[in-house]
Image (cartoon, rainbow, N blue to C red; front, side, top):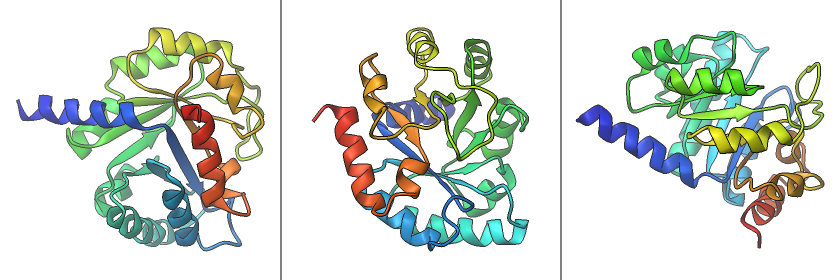
Length: 219
């Protein structure tokens, strides 16, 4: 009964999330990452993911603890990219897994039923598998060209539309989404998105979030 209630709470919350922002230390090396996170939250982002592919474990943990302090004070969920161990240690609200990371069902056993599990997918086959294995939401892309990650090709908006029709858990389009192209997603019925550079690299992250949210909710 407890596990069922926790699952209902996760699903209920995720359905309300419109803008999910990934904060990558490599993308904002000259800015204080804590300041960027605070501005993003003040702009209205409802969920934050911390990603760091290059730092030592020690530095990753230090940054994660600093960010968690901010997200906790603002009551915003913190999702840790890849690192289930660090997510558990800092008591993050969840983990985001890539295709080469721990399977969702294994991460679930480590973290427990009350944590959010997201999985990166780039096609419907991966999306269906991730959903079946217990993912709470999907990152689906890259939709557009992005400079924040090395990619071979983009998937475009048609697979996103199809995923929204087939997949029952929230699907967050990701990859190169910005103010210039987000309407291509809203035109096919997208009500949520996951962004990185469009916010983190902006001169004013708070305003960037506000403008993207307006596009998503149709203001």
